[in-house]
Length: 98
Image (cartoon, rainbow, N blue to C red; front, side, top):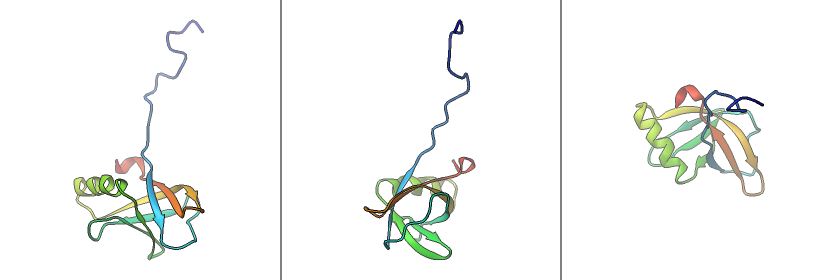
């Protein structure tokens, strides 16, 4: 306890989470790899070549900016949380993407 900083000297890593609305009652399981695709203004979520949801605002705009910076219309993400009653699930991008 004689240390100036009792916490780790490593930088804190914060990873953004993005909200998605499912198009059906079935939500993807936590850990599921999904594809985020932007055909037009909003970002759609796909699993096994089927649209399973769309990204909610303002998260869709934020991910759209990342896609524009990377000059792509598609990114991989994984499901980290699910809320079946509201049909909302949360996804994160891999750290290498950011």
